[in-house]
View 1 (cartoon, rainbow, N blue to C red):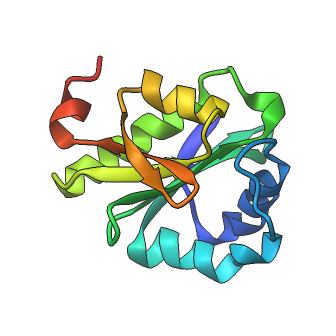
View 2 (tube, one colour):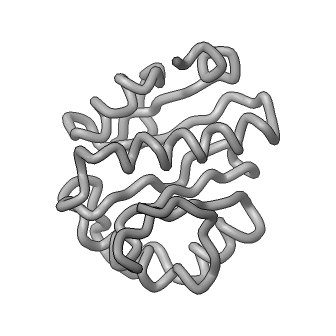
Length: 145
């Protein structure tokens, strides 16, 4: 397993990962374009990928402009191996090295992702549209083991 910063050359494989998920699926794959991904990893924030045998199996993207976690997705067959935890750690370590602003994310209720974020120390603060809204403060992140 190799963890590294995402580049624009990774976008095609990142999109494949995004479209293989079983939860938090997009109603229309055209909703998140390659140009959107490029903007989020080069202008608005930064992204990370995990490669296994030369293929991207997971990725995460943090948005400094909206103080939001824009993406954290894994191919379903790679869940439960610690990849999501490591991408999450890399992303939040970077985010909080750049700002002390509280970061938020949204995920569908009743999903494994919601459980993952609760276990990782995120606080549920209400709804954002049809999604649960979670927040992580700098102080709470610094308390993480």
